[in-house]
Amino acid sequence: MQAVSVILYLILAPFAGALLDGVSRIVSARMQGRKGPPLLQPFYDLLKLFQKQMIAVNSVQMLLNLSYLVFLAIAGSMLFAGADILMCLFILSTADMFLIMAASSDSSPFSSLGASREMMQIMAYEPLTLLLSVGFYLTTGSFHVGDIISRPVSAIVFMPGFLIGFFVITAIKLRKSPFDLSTSHHAHQELVKGLTTEMAGPTFGIMNVAEYYEMILMLGIVALFFLNENWWSWPLAIVMCLLVFFLEILWDNVSARVKWRTMLDSCWIVTLLSAGLNGLILMLIQ
Amino acid sequence: MAKLAKSPWLLHYDASSCNGCDIEVLDCTTPRFDIERFGIINTGDPFQADILLVTGGVNAQSEAVVKQIYSQMPNPKVVVAVGICACTGGVFKECYNIKGGVDTVIPVDVYVPGCAARPQAIIDGVVKALEILDKKRRDYAQARKSGQADEAEGGNEPWNT
Image 1 (cartoon, chains in turn brown, green):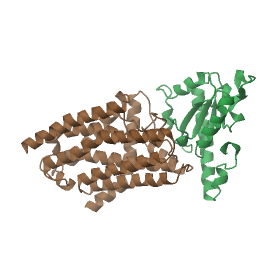
Image 2 (cartoon, helix red, strand yellow):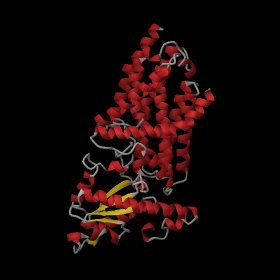
Image 3 (cartoon, helix red, strand yellow):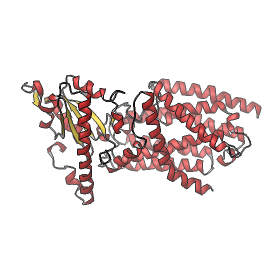
Image 4 (tube, helix red, strand yellow):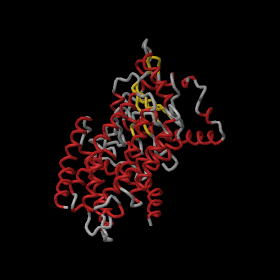
């Protein structure tokens, strides 16, 4: 069962991620009063990127990008295998370090600035990811995803604050406004293209596939809040994942990009108020 | 549209334009014209661009920049000259500082005349460019297969040195 879900994740996550990306581009376009691209546009983009000429400033960038992809796939596999969520979140941060190294490996000032902003983003979301695994432990008595999803009651009942905090940092991870400082999707430009400035063709394609793995991983963590031992929690979790994704798109479209200082302050305040308070209450009642 | 290139990303450069054509290029991204319908994204990064839109005639200062941007774009790629100045130099053709149209510096695939070029004309030009891009893509894939990618990538062209 575990092996099946891991294999399904490894095969289907890029497709599901690209499909969700296509949906998000259409929904964004409709919110802006435009028609938007075809649903399968992200697939066309990926196919094109892999057909393009490989222009690389150095040979290490491709390797680092592949490491980013592999580590994200490992992190996601751990979640979908029902393994340790703490380990999954640690590997998620490790993967991001490879992206930062890939971006800093060339001499472009835009790319380097994007890399340093990515580090700011890690600083902004990391406290909450750590608190999140503590929250799951306090609620369910285990770090194991397999145990977390086989409780009689969904975790969201005990940790709604964590979900609010997680919603905020998901905007960072999905590179949505107001937190798309290091690089952003779609037609938004910031620092040319931020940390992907010097990634061309296949290298950029690999980075995109990795982002799709990450997107599914983040939505998988959202699902953790809702899954319990009953069968009906699965459709409920999927619906809630899509709802969270829709709210992220809405937030992306109604907000402007903030400065890094504002991002850091607001993320830490939200982490402290939502996850911190929720965690304290959990400690008192458990 | 089936055979056309489905994911062309634009890079827009203002060589010496009066900003008339530039505003019309930006106009193409607005809800009224919405070029994202064709999967077109206005990217700012030559490394990720397929179509180079140049507005305005080329002068001594912008010549090196146009060449550099063109050389930074990965193959296959096409160039669209937007506006009469980019096509031929326009009313500035005889000016002491203007070299002429964009084609005096880099190879141009599609010419979109007009002062300023209308958004409809720009979209028309870009869609024409897609056909050329698609052909170049097939040629490039073939050259890659036969191991002549280096020649196809124009290793000895003057703008690549």
